[in-house]
Image (tube, rainbow, N blue to C red; front, side, top):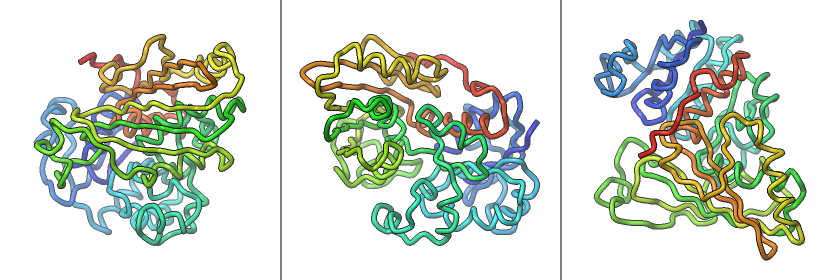
Length: 341
């Protein structure tokens, strides 16, 4: 058994990590920190009652350092900008520690990108070149296995990359790509904000941050800077899920060539399902699965992807990365069907 801790257990990312790790046969969660909660974790997350006896511990510099030196792996499930300050001192204090960060703080290699896309100056730019971007299905599997610090991908970026990567890898992209991504309300976090809490969202649909969303540069980084992508995210009135529709110019490539590149990329991937019909978010709810379908015609491949933003888009991929780092079978603790509703 490896010992794991979660920094930030009161948000949806920490919640979903606890749910996955409660069923992981090789992991014991020994600490869950919180700045606002005390007592048993199940008091905050009632659906975990009977599946974990973990209790929240305070979140201070001293407790984080003590935790870091007593566990094998640390999951950071905190807002953007927090892990950038907190994680490097812990990595330096515990030389054998592995860290998987669910925020965007170590996804981009260039410190100036954080001023441009996240609105803050990165306090530990020296660690940007020492982290590994962790989306196993899109070429990062070997690098993650050897990493000390894994930058878990963003939820929109995960779905977009699963849609675009096979075509970019095969060299079939002939022009600028366009991605529309639709996300559920849990992607906005556990604390209600103007425009994201239920009365504002339940009967509404809108775009936000068109061409300016912080997940765009990580998509471009993973695909290679020669690939141009326009990205527009949308807010939808459901709780869990992301649905991406990507429009990819493929020139004279045939339907058979396009289908073959997706088969070559994903036929052996345990968490990618190639579907004959457009995917639905409810089919992947509560899972680490990505459902993918492709339609080709008139020089364009239309690729549709559905994931659970809290699963494949966050905690599921984090556990998948943990399995790679520690040499467990990749599906350990993750092999389950979708909820269906």
